[in-house]
Image (cartoon, rainbow, N blue to C red):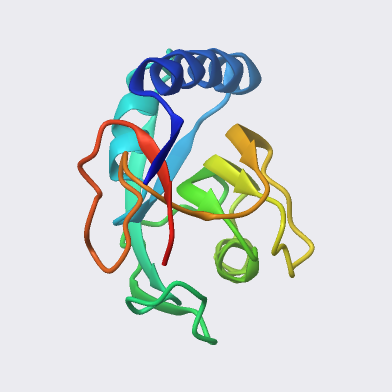
Length: 169
């Protein structure tokens, strides 16, 4: 494993993202939707850096199923329970890779009648992007490589590492 981003670099970038998001949403309602499990560390740190009122929601999406490549159809195994019609939604995830899951979930939220949907990811992995979607806010842009740590996993391992590493799969 090779360190890609150290914990102090991550903390500084999350602080900056919190400021950017706060500025953008100042004076507007904000519902932050965290995609579990990967976003939990990033989401926790991020919302503490956002200084506008935030409503939190969580969902679980599945496309990897313990593999290193997406495995087809996106499944929403835990959806938002509250009515979010008319709200401004910011989806927070650990990584935007192919974009297929994020695009499908963004469309799902639009069908629920939200006012707006934006995307914030810790990592914007551009190399394998297959869907027409880009993050509105992102921590770091990376080209290729399988990454773990700070919530990111490989087969449910490595999530609790404080740094982000690239590994060979």
